[in-house]
Image 1 (spheres, rainbow, N blue to C red):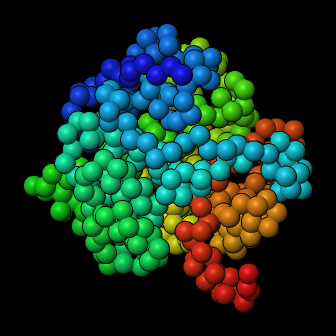
Image 2 (cartoon, rainbow, N blue to C red):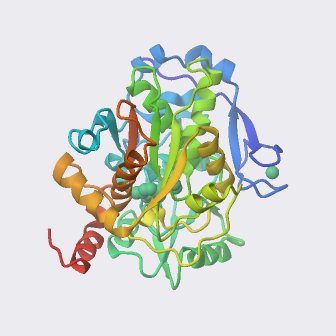
Length: 403
Ligand SMILES: *Cc1c(COP(=O)(O)O)cnc(C)c1O
Ligand SMILES: [Zn+2]
């Protein structure tokens, strides 16, 4: 099998003010305006070797998209088996809703049980290549485990800051990979403050969502994979449980790149953000017609990946939803739990609460007429339910139910 050629990266551009930044050194947010930075590639050069035919012959890994990924020296490409997750037709939930072509992309099968593995694989690989000595992240869930695993693979220390009420399974996971976990009283924002205080004068590199340019590069590969798995087409609709929105904006970026490569035209899937009604800043801003949003006060939901009150990429999320003719909607905790049970009992997928939210959203989207019966809809299942076993049990108990 052919080894993929190298990265065609040429620079970093600020998504807000357009300022250019050096891609050969570690970078955080834009130094002029504080906006997120995006990697830019020489797409003409990339396209000479990155073709659908060439891809089909390369080893199954995210790294087969090397031309449009930032890591330049193959020795730094960490690989724990991330990416290449299955895409399969829903056997019951879709057809029962009148959606005959509902596809489920099961991201829970990634290393560390969530699609956070994609982004952190890329961020850690690239930062290690550029000389990072250690990593730091505030997280209430899956990002901590993913960072810890990839830092261990890179042989570098990871410092994880978690709210003290984080379920023990998520804390233990980080420690299992040798990371140092600090539990902080309060919300994720408090954990973030503490992490930032300790960054000062340390060799730690902050890999918070969109505060460095490369997690989004790992997540964007989901967009490329959809095209490949659908035989060179994109779906009509993508339904995505949205927290920081990295995957949503990542896929949006990927579609732009694929257009530059000449693989697709100007058409785009309608992008749909799903949130929990206890933390729905994207939904609120989308329907209010706002271009960005303030922090959601008192965020509450058992879907920890969706408990993100404010996002660095808020502007980009809203642009992708509007630019695609998409929408945003929220579901409540009962709908989330029902969705989890349905995925388990009717599809054979041990689902996370984030996945449950997606199922609740599909039902509403069909009822509202946003989805047509013959459309090809891809629903993202983003986490493995086994990590949430206690949370799910607790939610059932509160309803007076049992497994
Ligand atoms: C982080 C997370 C999300 C949200 O992902 P974003 O790309 O940050 O919006 C959804 N589901 C799970 C399981 C997560 O861990
Ligand atoms: Zn800027």
